[in-house]
Length: 136
Image (cartoon, rainbow, N blue to C red):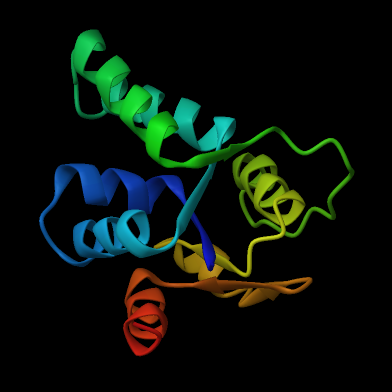
């Protein structure tokens, strides 16, 4: 079964929107394996609190639902080459690489410009939708 790692921006877009990211999230949950890391969950919590002012009980509920639906990979312990333009993205990319997922889905243009790291493809939500829609 295809395992798909979603970046924080895709998860939050799925939670807070009703467009492509929401549809992609639902498709991944329904037919594939959603992979996240503790770093993504922590970043979601921080942004939901600071940027979107979501109350703590709702944040806890959302994070618990994500933990129940996703395969949560531990922080990567192996050293990972620093290829991320933003150092804050390095632990998230390292976790995705350690999880050996074929796809890392993000809306971050700087990360998309990398295209691949080792054997992991970095793709936009639209590209991931197209790939998964073809395999239905």
